[in-house]
Structure formats: C-alpha cells, structure tokens
Length: 247
Image 1 (spheres, rainbow, N blue to C red):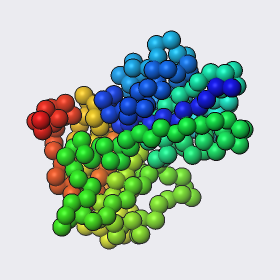
Image 2 (image 1 turned 60 degrees about the vertical axis):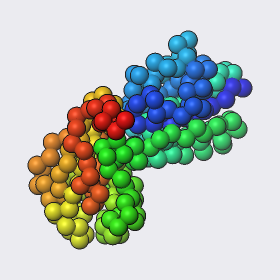
Image 3 (image 1 turned 120 degrees about the vertical axis):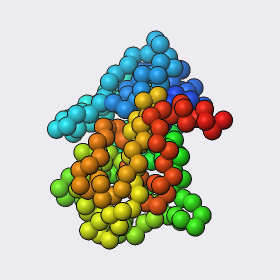
C-alpha cells in the first residue's frame, strides 16, 4: 500500500510552497492536481511522476469529485505514493476534508500538508492587512460560490470588520448588494486581487457600491477584500514589482 499526501500548493508562487510540500512533490509517484495549481509549481515535482489533471468544470463537479476519489484509491492500492495537490490550503474551500474522510473510511493512510491559503496571501500580496490596529480587529473568510440553498448569512457577516471572499467573481454584484442591504456602507473600500502572487497579479481597488453597480471588471481567479483595510491596496499589475519595492 502506498500513501496519500493531501498537499496545499499555496496561492500560485512556487516560492510560497512549504518545505514539506516541495519535498513530497519531488518524491511523488503520482500527482493529482487541481485547476488553480500553476505550471511553475508542477515544474518542481518529480518529472517521472504520473500527472493527472483534476480540474472541475461547471455542472461536472460531483462526477469529477467521484473520479478523483476513485483515482486516489486505485493509485494508492497499487503501492504508489500519491500527492493530491490543491491550490491554497486543502482544507479551505477545497473539499480536502471530504477526500480525507473518504480515504480514511477505506483504511488509507493520509498525511495532510497545509498550504498558504489565498484568503491570507492575496490580501498580503496587494499590501492589504486583514487586521490592523485601530481599524480592523476581526476578519472572516467566506465563499462566494453558493448554491441556491447555501447562501451565506450576510446579515451576520456584515458585522465583521474585514471580509475576505473567495470565488466571488461570478456573483460579485449580487454579493455586494447583499452586503449593502445588510448594512455595509456602499462607499466602503473594497479590492479584488486577481491571480495573486503570480507575475500576472492585478489589484483592483474599488468600493462596495461600484461592485454592486456592475462597474468592476475582473477575471477569476480573484479574491475580494471588503473593509476599511482595503484602502491600503497597492494598485499594481505585478506581484514581482511590489515584492521588489518592499525589499
């Protein structure tokens, strides 16, 4: 029997992989990777490994998830060491918990290797502190990708100082309107961080009202930050440029 490593790939920059993530990638015999895992991260894995793409597409999520679980089971039973590679952290909106539970129920050894979540990395890469003395004493991370029966409790979340919303691009106007209706100020600062920590990073400083009005153009993957701290956003098209300016 082989072993499964449930690994967080971080937000995109290969330099933000943990040391342990790098080590298990370099020794993996199979790498089953998600859509948001960058080519630069795959390039540091064992070149002799079998690479299996496991990206999900709209309307096929459940069928793909079943295929992923079966692949993990089949490969590890062949005696192979398998890295299940997920963007960010595997337990932050990555269905990592479901895969861990499935494998555990089948008696498979699983080791979780945490990763840096884009919920923290994306704001930081844009110069936004999710907490800041005198401005923000709390933050919450929420998914913007919701089914009809799984809408977040925006009334309750509206009371949190800083909101970090993942997978919000497609529903950004509706989310912004829901937050305004729940009591957030339409003039409140907000920012989208697109393709965070990669050379293609773009930061879009804006307001909640402009998002609600459909005035903000942004492409996924992007992280939305709402709150006074979003006013710190460094409007730059390059994470590399920002990093160099801070050195």
